[in-house]
Image (cartoon, rainbow, N blue to C red; front, side, top):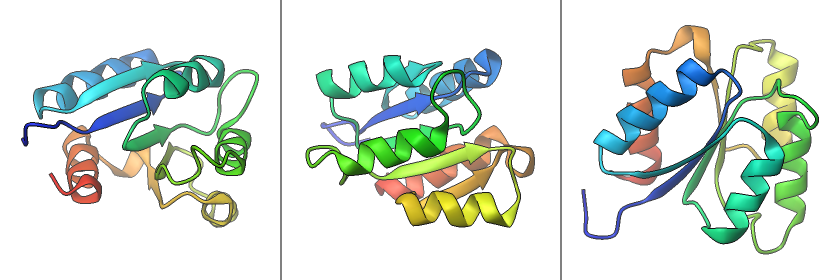
Length: 126
């Protein structure tokens, strides 16, 4: 990986998946910030702007759809690419997320950890 590693924010309330993603992406040389809820994510995004955000949709308090909407309404944050990582595979959810500004939509049940890492590398050019 280059001298200036890319930063990724992962918002996922399934702790085992979150820890596995953090470990695998960190091993690839990325700086990874992890949160289990949107409040934590917004706080960390303000401190260190990520190059990519992976977010689940089903979370406590604020869901992933609202998170994307709020992020994309913020002039300073709206250019950060967001990928949805969810088990909600219905086409309506995919369309809604993309209409809100998500660059891609990955269904957890259809992807291995290696697939997710490859997808991140593809998006970040790594």
